Structures are given as C-alpha cells and as structure tokens.
Amino acid sequence: MKILHAARSLGGTEKMDDVLTTDVDFDVIVVGAGVAGCVTAYQLATKGHSVLLVERGQTPGSKNLSGGVFYCSIMEECMPGFIDEAPIERRITRNCLSFLSESSFVNVDYGDKRLKESVTAVSVLRAKLDEWLANKCEEAGVMLMSGVKVDTLVKENDSIVGIRAGEDELRAHVVVAADGVNSFICRDAGIRAKEPMKHLAVGVKSVIRLPRNVIEERFNLTGDEGVAYAVVGDCTNGVAGGGFLYTNLESLSIGVVLRLDDLVGKGYSSVELHDRFLTHPAIEPFLKEGELLEYGCHMVAEGGQDMVHDLTRAGLVVVGEAAGFALNTGFTVRGMDLAAGSGLAAARAIDAALLKGDYSKVSLDQYSAELDHTFVGKDMRTYAKAPYFLENPRMYGDYGKILSDVMYSVYNLDTTPRQHLLPGAMKALKKSPVKLTQIIKDMYAGVKAL
Ligand SMILES: Cc1cc2nc3c(=O)[nH]c(=O)nc-3n(C[C@H](O)[C@H](O)[C@H](O)COP(=O)(O)OP(=O)(O)OC[C@H]3O[C@@H](n4cnc5c(N)ncnc54)[C@H](O)[C@@H]3O)c2cc1C
Image (cartoon, rainbow, N blue to C red):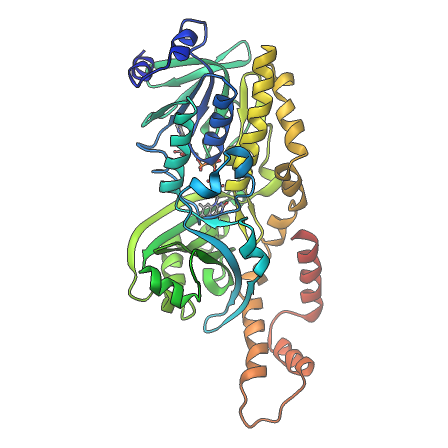
C-alpha cells in the first residue's frame, strides 16, 4: 500500500501506529483540504481522533479559487485565534453595490463605524489561506497527504468503509466528502447525479498586483481597511451573474461569476466576459498600471437549497460545497463560511458516532439535525428563493439602464426646464421596455427572496 507507506514515512505519530494495527487505517478520512475539509479534520484531531486529510493539489489551496471575502465570524469557534494568526489580507469595512450600464455606474457605497469595530468579513487569497489551514491541521495531529487524488469509495454491505487512490486502499470508520462543488464522492455514493447547468456558475478571476499606497489612495482606505464591490447589471453583457472586486493588501481580486446555462445559451465565453468587465469605464481606472499575478476559472454552486441533497450515508458525511452549501444573493457570494459551519457541525456528529462506535446513517444523521439549527441550515432556507429571483433577465440589462437614465435626468443640468424627481423618473421609465407593474412585481419578488 504505497499511500500507507508514504503516510508512515511522513512521520506518523505513535498514536497513528496504534491505529494502523486495527481493522481501519484511520478513524476518519477527509477528502479535500479546502475550508470545509480543514475545519472538519482540525476539529476531529483536537478531539483526539486519528484523521487523514487527502488533497489532490500539490499543496492545499493550489487548486482553489474564491472571489475572496470570507465572512469569518464562525472561524473563532472552528480555530480559535483565527483573526490574529490567519493570513488575512484586509478587514472589509466598506461594501459597495455597483449597478452598471454600458456607459455608467450607480454605486451604493456603504461604510459603517460598526463594521470597523468588529471583524466579520476579511479578504483572503486561497493559496495562502488553505496552506495555513492545512498547517493548523497538521499541528493538531492530522496526517496530510497532498498530491493524491481519491478515485473511488470503498463500499461494503451498503456502507462506505474507505477510499481508493490509484492502486491504494485506505479504510476508516467515517469518510468525509469535502471535495467541493463537483464532488465526485457524492456521485459515487449515489447522493447526487450530474447537476443541471442552471445550478452551476463559472467564476473567472484575476489577481492584479498594485502597490499598497496606490490601493489605499484609489479606494480611500487606511491601514488594513478594505472594500468589497458587488457589481450587477451590464458587467456580464446580459448573462445571469455579476462581477466582484475586492481589495487585498497589495493586490485586487476581480472577476465575474456567470450562470452556466445562460452563458452557454447566449453563446459567450467566460473569458471574453471577464475581459469585458475589466475594461468597463467604471472598473478600468481601478486597475491602471496593475500587474496580473494570477488568473483562473472555477465552478461555483448556484442552486441554493435545491442543490442540497442527502448529507450522510452509512460511513459517509458530506460537507461544504460538496453538499451544495453556497449562496449568491447578488449582494454577497458566500461559500467559505458555510463550508466552515458545516465542517464544525459534521465534526461534532462524527465525534459522537466515534464515541458510540456507531457509523450507521441514523447515527451520522445527527449532523443534519444539528446543521438545521445553525446559521448554515437557516441561511440556506432563508435564501431558498434567491436563485429563482436571480434568474430574472431584467437584472442584467434593463435595470442598470433605467437607473442610469433616472440619475442622468437628475444630474444632467442642461438648459431644459427641470422636472421633479418622480415625473423625471417616470419619463425614464416610459423609454424603457419594462413596464412599471413589472418593476413593482420584481421589487416584491426581490424583497421576498433576498
Ligand atoms: C469565482 C468565485 C468567487 C467566489 N467568491 C466567494 C467569496 O467571495 N466568498 C465566499 O465565501 N465564497 C466564495 N466562493 C465560493 C467558495 O470558494 C466555495 O464555496 C468554497 O471554497 C467551498 O469550500 P469547500 O471546502 O467546500 O470546497 P473547496 O474549497 O472547493 O475545496 C475542495 C478541495 O477538495 C479537493 N479535491 C477535490 N476532489 C478531490 C479528490 N478526488 N481527491 C482529493 N482532493 C480532492 C480540491 O483540490 C480542493 O482543495 C467563490 C467561488 C468562485 C468560483
């Protein structure tokens, strides 16, 4: 067993050697060293269990990509000291919602002293963050194996009893699927079939290097303060989705998230729309004289609650985006906090199962029950209608244009006699193909969904 030999030669602890003499190689095998996998592995190791964390990337984080705002309040519970020790770029103290039309932008720029006083959102770069998380796991006693792709699950009598990678087989009481949005493990376990395209989006992201002082001047920031832009409207050329721009210490994370069915249906390439966004007149000045450091594409779960399937099988627990936990509300893209929250709940349930020696589905279902009472289960339910609302094509063209025309009627002070705001807005609306009743219906749907 090559992997097992490698695991031993990597420096298995005495405790690990004890475990290797029993019928299982580890108490728990976690597949995927993203946020969900690392939190689960760390929590179980600190409770004294033997844990193997398998990651297909050569280093944790090398295969990962996020826009980069981590709503990180949950991390103090998952890994105490996170805020002080983790490789955080900036604290997000300002949020800007930007509506684009082809030639204009209308921004709602929200800053708040309260956001500066507590740290609830930070910008991160996944290559650094995931490596740090994996190091914390190793410090807690987790055996990390990078550069190993899990190929199949090992099943016996309807239970999952281990994993196979190449010719090697490893056994555990519980396997944790933390292998992200395209979770092959969930498919292998019969939990998920291939997701419909409307449940998936493709994200294309660049990291652009700029000197720290230039970022702070351009975005009006001081110290470690940061700003997050959520961009809607024309930035995707009518394709369902949006843009984002986040400030790091010495770089900007910028890109687009595009719903796959609409992207394919409209015949655009994701790269072309990413490049178009970066050259929009509202965006380009932010990037001036920047140097491209990183560029990548990654899928993201967009189906919301409809993408959440079974979370357990006998011997198997599913966490993070593999379980469908991701939320796009247009204001925020969330996945990392839900990954951490689900990892924490899973570790509690697995710990209880290990103590009882009962790895049946019924026993592991404590995870689903527990999750229901956490912010993960509750937020997934609260935003269950968000994906349907965001299917509305008017969000990606008409509304940016209407808003821009209303603002133009207010600020274009030529010699035409002025009108009050309401008649001016009504005139702009009359020019638009969208009827007032439709706008009211859309606003109502938005209020209910978001
Ligand atoms: C463009 C974009 C922007 C985003 N912006 C944000 C944002 O601003 N904020 C936010 O919170 N979320 C954001 N997300 C979502 C977020 O990135 C994910 O929800 C989150 O990373 C999910 O964490 P996870 O640990 O479940 O999975 P992942 O981070 O995807 O980790 C899964 C891990 O499993 C490994 N793996 C997969 N298959 C195997 C295998 N067979 N064997 C071994 N290892 C395997 C992978 O290499 C990877 O390391 C964004 C996503 C994209 C694509």
